[in-house]
Image 1 (cartoon, one colour):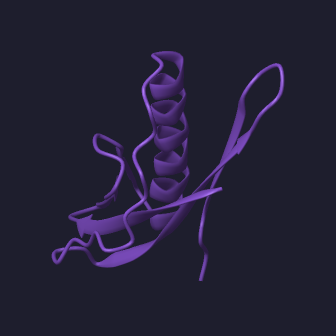
Image 2 (tube, rainbow, N blue to C red):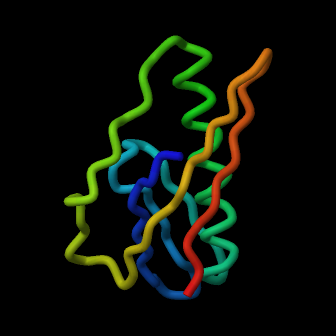
Length: 94
């Protein structure tokens, strides 16, 4: 399991989400729960793309922070190896 750091910002009627230590992984939602689900899906897609291209996954950096974030929390990427690679993603819930 790799534990990255997600951040969320409320802007008007939406919540913007980003995985701080996996560049390019962003999502939004009309609620925090929706933003979390979409960010988890985006993280899974980004990780899968890196692996399919033969590129390494970014190393999680727990020191990453966004001073403008309204909320920061861990987001977990779980890899299962076998004949096929399977991934699951979960966000921490309060």
